[in-house]
Amino acid sequence: METNSYPRLRSVEAIFVPHDAFGRALLLRDGEGIAEAALAIRADLAAVVTSMDGTRSIEALARHAGSIAGQTIDVTTVRQLVTELDAAYFLDSPHYVRKRREVVAAFKSRSERPAHHAGSAYHADAKELRRFIENDCLAKARRVAGRGRMVGLCAPHMDLWRASVGYGHAYAALAESLPDEVDTMFVLGTSHTPMRRPFAVCDKPFVTPLGAMSPDREAIAWLASRSRFDVKEDEYLHKCEHSLEFQVVFLRHLVGTRPVRIVPILCGLGRAISSGIEPSSDAAAESFLVALRELVERRGERSFVVVGADLAHVGPRFGDARPLDARQRDELLQRDRVSIERMVERDARGFYVHVREDLDTRRVCGIGPIYTALRVLPEGASGEVLHYDQCVDPGEGSIVSHASLGFYR
Image 1: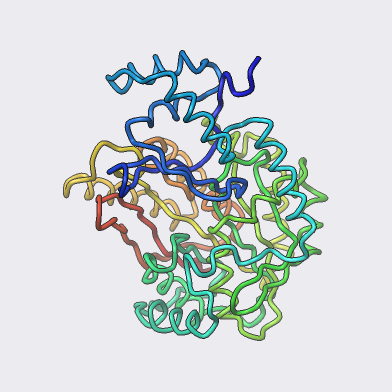
Image 2: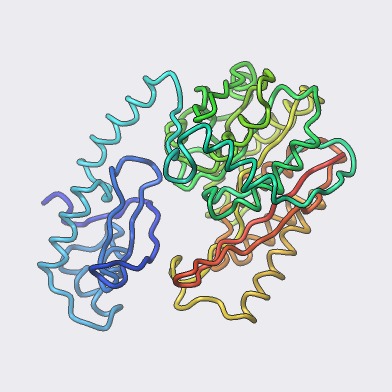
C-alpha cells in the first residue's frame, strides 16, 4: 500500500488566521517541535485536513471534504496537500517517526532546556526583559493585601506582550508575599501537545535570558519512585512548551540570587479528560497526584506551587463561526466566574466537572494544571482573585480569557 494512501493528521494546533495570499488560512503549528515551521493551508481546504483521520483514502477524502465544504474538491489537490503535509512533518507517517526520533534524541542529550520562545513571545535581551517586567507588568498591578501566608499562584500563560497586566498582578503579589523559607517551586503547566502519560517532569535546568533555574532533582526522583508510570516518558514535550517557560522567566526575575529550585511539571491528564472521568479514577494519574501532594506537605513552608494556565479560547481563530457579541461575552464572563469560584474555594472536583461541561466550546486549556494545583496545595489554603481579563484579538475578535489568583493560608 502506498505510503500515506490513508493519511492521518498528527495532533497539532490548528487555528484560523488572516493570510496575505489566501485571505483566510488554517494555520497548523506543532507544539511538539518536530515540524520546523507553521504551515498555512487555504481555508477552503480545511475540511480536507481535519478529515485526515487515517480511515479514508485520498479519493474518499476528496468526496467527504467536498460534501462538508459544499464544493467539488479535486483528487489531485488532495494528493498534493498530503504530500505537502508529510514533507512538513504534520502527518503521522514514517517520515515523521524518523524525524521525531532524531529530535527527541538531540533534546535528551542536552544538558539544559533552552529558552525556546525568547525573542518571539518576550524579549531575548536581558536588560530589555527586566525593564519590560518591571515597567509593563509589575508596575501596572493593583496591590492586594493577602489573607495570610502565600503558598501558591495562578498566572496566565499567554505571550507576555498580550497578557502583561495579568502577569503583573500575579507576580507583583508574589514579589510582595513570597515567604523567605521557600526554596522549591512546583511549576505546573498545560501541555498543548497530547501526552502519552498524565504528567511529565523535566530534570534539566530551564534557561532564560536572565539566567537558568535549576531543577530539584531530589524531588523529581521522589515523585518518580512513587508514580505508577514513567514520569519522564514525555519529558521531551518540555522542549517547546510555553506554559512553563513563561512562568520561569518571571520567577527567575523575582527570586534574584536566592537558591530556589524548580520542579517543572506538564499536566496532560489526557485519558481522564478525553473519557470524561475525574482524574482520581485514573490509577496512574492518582498515584502522581497523591505523591505530589505528599511531597508538598513534606517540604512544608519550603514549598510553593505556581500554575501557568489560561481559561477560555473562543472565536473564529479557534473554529467558531463568528466572534462573540456583547451578550455572549457576558455569558462567557459568567461561566469563567463560576470556574474561578471553584478555584477560590479549592474545589478540585467542582472545578473539573464545571469545565468539562463545556470543554468542547469554551476550550479551557488550563484544566490539567489548575485541577492538579487544587489537589496538591497545602491544607487550609484558599484563593484570592487578583485579576481577570478577556484578551480580544483586534483583527477578528477571538478571545482568550485568563485569571490571576493568589493562594493563601
